Image 1 (cartoon, rainbow, N blue to C red):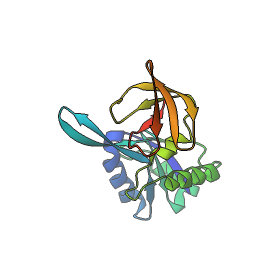
Image 2: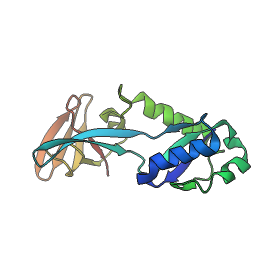
Image 3: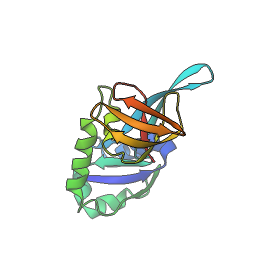
Image 4: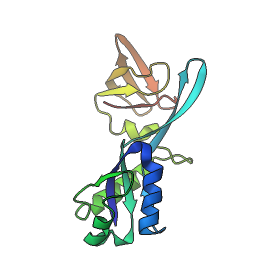
Length: 166
């Protein structure tokens, strides 16, 4: 059974270690993430970012037992487990499969994941317009027509620029 845990993002390694120590090695973790490149001064820096910020999916066969979850409430790096995981198993599994269908060979989500959920406004997270907001004027099969400030431009699906909804 899957549960969703809110964790301290800087302590994700500690959380996983303490979880395995207390629950055993038959646990699966899933946390969708993206990888993007940006310039820091004159150097190109590769950055990894978690899409769900500080939430992680955890699977263990014993999560169906309420005593098991209660025994894990005080793990290092854990803030809390979200309630309602029992009732929402189908949605959790469907979301994980959806995310995995948009992953590249390195396990990072591709831009097409975000293209499907962006409706009106978004923010660039890589490329020459990094941290700039844009508004979508028109969606086409192979590109987006957007307005950045007062400039109207098109973004091809083949570019490596990443953007996410705001």
